[in-house]
Length: 554
RNA sequence: GGGCUUGUGGCUUAGCCAGGAUAGAGCGCCGGGCUUCUAACCCGGAUGUCGGGGGUUCGAAUCCCUCCAGGCCCGCCA
Image (cartoon, rainbow, N blue to C red; front, side, top):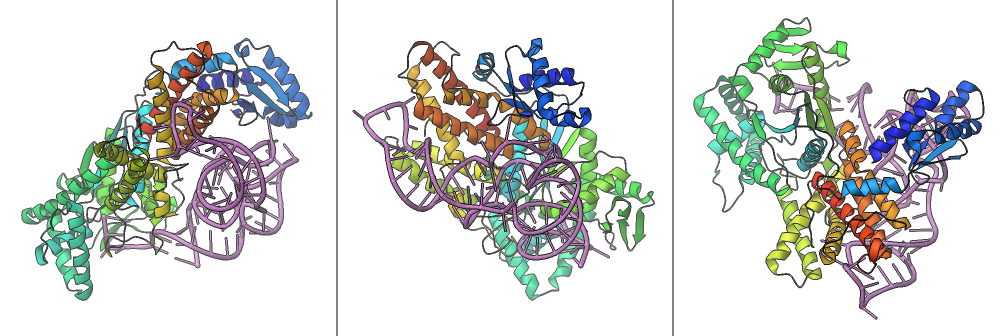
């Protein structure tokens, strides 16, 4: 109802003023919708905006498409108030499964996220990428787009060569029940220590890199083995976080299939391409002064070259290419885009997020300075179990663990997604372990409360007569869900969904506090039950878009 | 040094791109509310030079300039 009503008013405003895109916004505390168009016209008509607003309001009142909308002016502002039909329309949509789904679109999207180097477990910085990426994937799918999710496996970088050196030169047996990614990290950290002590090892690592690029079978299989071991660990962690990739794309494939040398050959024909030892691209025309090196003087390619091949492949197979990358990739992201433009290829839309650091400083896999996602999940789950156990003595242990696991992921995902990606953050255990307001569990709890009421109510006849302030406010917020989803997808900003879901839970809790449902009667009871069902459904859809389970009980 | 980015009550933050009506929340603090649909809840109170300064505008947290502070980047790493 929100999107439709918004459009109706916008068109009426356009018709009344002749302005093609009249300003119209959410009315906030003042109204359902509001326009400041009188300010714009005041300058043009050289008349006071208040007068213009009054006249415009009169014209709009005569518009047949706005019959159910109350129009008033407040000084120069024109405010629009929706009526009963808006609430009725909203609730009848919101009680249906899949509420918020937007029309199916033909554009196919490939979205790449996480793509951490397989040299150690995912840590609390990496999962910011995962959670932003996965929430975007879910949002896009709900918004009607077919999406393929890819993980780009950097399987031939220097870090992996270091790991391989460690596996072949150090005591590298896995420990009892050690996850593959943690095992790889241990060897990687040890190998780095050895390298610091003996710089001669660097040339041995270089040899591994040359051999893998040439396709030396034994070396390739060594690389594959350690990378696979690490990826198995990643998959386990990602699955705990409810993030799923459709495809893992291996970087080395773009060497083997010739795509990398093909893109370099194409670039050689460009004036911007220079070969003086290294092969590099001059992107100064795009405002980038840094040389974009694609090939080393020893003839091996660098990451950037393979990344170009990967992006060309994505661009040719999909209509939109979206990458979620850390802010440290901003420069190379713009270099990548500038080079793809040079070649006339499709360019990616890149969502950058800022770093997560620890109170003692930035994280480093090499130095072993990080909090792994696995540790985080384990600790938060333990705390959630204590919390559930304290509240639900009626449940057996297995049931409590099940709720705790779900609550823990809700807490983690929400804690991360609620912050705008452009803010750098310092990881804080206290916040990670907070299950109260502005948390994932808080929203899950509102959903569980709604489920509880509906479970006790049994069958009922939908009704739409709402009159209390908290009822109307809740219904009007439910109306905004498709609009918020559309904005989130348009701006590539998943945290809008997080904010929305929290506000919805807030409004439901206020309604819950003041208006009894099961103890009310007749039309009022059915209307409140309808409102509770609509809320439950919207909370569920919003939570699932955030990758959080909508628990029926907790 | 250059580039990008962030700076909003004690702490965490929304709002900024597409400028408008008293700057929203949460934590913490103070005071209330469970024989009532799950208190992971709700209500009330105190707390703000929206980093500083200048500018544009009828109007600036929002746009521009400048300064200050934090983060990130500036590899033949990825």
